Amino acid sequence: MAEIIIMPKLGFNMSEGKLVNWYKKEGESMTKGEALFSIETDKTNIDIEATSDGILLKTFIGEGDTVPVTLPIAIVGAAGDKIDALVTDALAQLGMEDDPSPAITKTEAPVATEATKKPEAPAATEGPIVADRDFDIIVLGGGPGGYVAAIKAAQMGKRTALIEKGKVGGVCLNKGCIPTKTFLRSAEALKEVRESESFGIIGVDTSGASLDMGILQKRKHKIVSQLVGGIEGLLRGNKVTTFQGEGAVIDKNTVAIGDKKITGEYLIIATGSEAEYMPIPIDPAMKIFISDDILNLDYIPKDMVVLGGGVIAIEFAYFLASVGCKVSVIVRSRILRTATDEEIAVQVAKHLRDIGVDVYEAAQVKEVTKDSVTFEKDGKLQEVKTGNVLLATGRTPSTVGVPCEELGIKLSKGAIVTDDTCKTSVDNIYAIGDVNGKWMLAHAASMEGIVAVENICGHHSVMDYDKVPGCIYIQPEIASVGLTEREAREKYGDVKVGKFPLIANGKAKVAGDDRGLIKVIVEPRYNEVVGVHLYCIHATDMIAEAVVAMKLESTAEEIAMSIHPHPTVSEIYHEAFHAAVDKAIHFM
Image 1 (tube, rainbow, N blue to C red):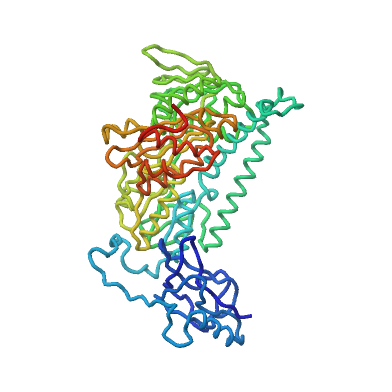
Image 2: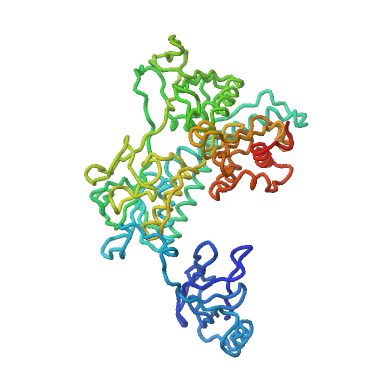
């Protein structure tokens, strides 16, 4: 049965839409899910898909026309459908009984001026895609950067290939972010069980509560499997051609996967990173772990010395200590040196010590023997006895399969050099994620993938590396974006700092964890927000507010005067910004 297609309302404030393209002409057939037309909103162009198989029987507006939302723009149906009554009704709604129509606004193409011209696309993206290549874009690596880039490229109409040697999702999904957070959630659940009596839960003996690593491993595998399957479905649904195997770049347009070679006009390198090893003597009799090994444990070690003080080191130290392992952390400078503000890092170190972790900061590891770790601190040699050592000193970019020197790709400290469009020194090659060494974070890699593809497709898009959030999933959680107080003072001088403790937040009290604080940094001239640091429950879920605020160049006053719902932990935001420019309301 024939039906009317209306101008969709795609946003709360959207009152009208401009039709940019008809992808089908009157009389042409369409299939469900196929793009039928695109419209322009106040933010972007959006393709609207056909909701069923059929034929585009009648269109009422042309490309460039603007009509109010919910008014008819076309009729679709099957061959032979009677549409006279629908046409009459549609014309009446549009006011088109007597042409011209008052409901339709004709848009003349504007004359480009220097003020209205969009930035030109980089030279490498100019001109049509070469038709004799197998693909328009080849993505090497299927992690959170690579698979997102592949999906985005396919959505933008490019013939796209994705090469992945393991499972899609990369280290993040299979051996990093998701498995680690699964472990940490179990540690959190164990803590909740042990503390349940304080919430009024009685009649349950929790004295023997412990963590079964075998059950945890099964849960981890189930979660990972479901997410991997979801990504595989997205790749298929977006018609990305996936190659299983290790890719080797032959030249700037050719990649080999085993005996097979494929060609592409553009190459996106997303080969990730690998664990970094410490250049110290290690006795082969000592049991050495890297993060992959911890995530495959089916038992809880009696003890563990963690070498390193970054995010990976601190998350594993927290997990192991929470489930009954005796943990020592040895770090060359201080923990979380580059991950968050120094004031928060000091509180985290105290928290770790409170749960039994021995934290040795400003310590230089000298040797790992068969049963201990020797290090120098305060000019004296010290030793920690242990049967296990976790090497968690960081990760290093992996360019396996990419002959950078032969291709003319510039490197810096092992990382591929890219600009803010993610383009390398070779015009048709882009590099995203850990391999460019800028932000070794999954969400940064995903955004880099989108930015790279948009530039390949002729759009002007750049990365904003000053506003990448970082998260640490211990309890309380840690989340940061922008400058630390030290960095802000070096850049702006006399900055404004606002703080608010969780002990003054009602929702934190209710949740039973009022540790930590929020710390915000504001530059002095406009009161623009330049840094936000959270150490509290739900921090990783709340940091996005700060990212959006900074992206929009918000001021302290704007956030302070934004209504935050009560009772929520998010109320600490407006309290901290009140404190930055004057005084917090609920704390002296």
